[in-house]
Length: 134
Image: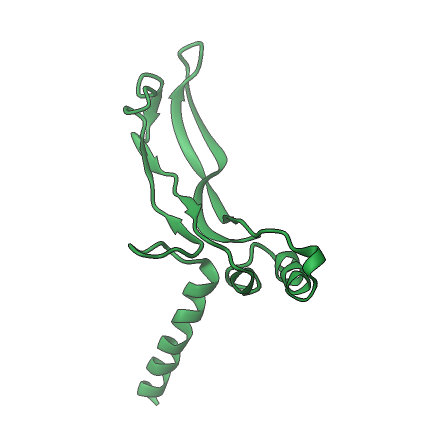
């Protein structure tokens, strides 16, 4: 019984990863999430941002062929999956799919405002967690 549970847990893991999106590997050309770190010092913002010193903003890149956009784990929404099925069967509805963020989360910043007050704020949708095809 113990081995069976362990096998079942491993069998479910790839499904969870696929729903979340795909991180780009070295030679990947399909829609994926590219990690990208922004250093606030490099863009000249270190004088007003206290924390963090930078953040992993990440971005989406890659191709979205029609068969990729129809996959629920990679489609930006159920609407996208349905639209791509229609496009696959109807040449008149042909619209290119784009690789876009499907999951994001906020960035917490501690910074000085114009009056030199220290302010903490959460800026929504600043960090890309997953990508998919529109």
